[in-house]
Amino acid sequence: MFEVSIAEAIIFLTVFGIIVGVLWAIFVSRPKTAVSEEEQYIQRLNSQWAQQRHEETQRAERIRRETEQRLPANRSTPVASVNDPTAAAGPSMMHPSGTMPGGADANPEYHAVLALVQQGRIVEAVKKVRQDTGIGLVDAKKFVDQMSGRG
Image (cartoon, rainbow, N blue to C red; front, side, top):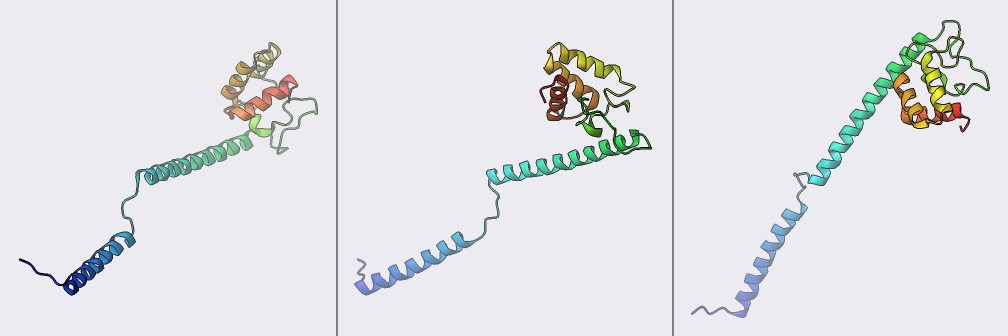
């Protein structure tokens, strides 16, 4: 039927091999246009993180401006005694009413937190500080620890 010489077979296989090699090189070397699900997930996480970071920065700046507005005009930061547990707290521990806990015009919220600390109800005291001031968990915990003498 078909008689193929060895030379023809070698030429056919060589040409076939070259075609397959060229096609393989084209498909392997072309850049991927589709982004994998994992890469899409990472991109979404990075985008969400950047957005959250931006919002937190704006919130911190707004809180800083509000705190500066509440400070007395004659000094830039509240002065606290060495034994005052709020001494290390700085302006961020200011109550929204504009008074510094433990100051001469101590507010009832401070006394409520102090009572909770004295009763050993530390978790409730931390919650109360966060609710009253809007500060983060770590800062509220440090503040309550200073009040209780553990900080």
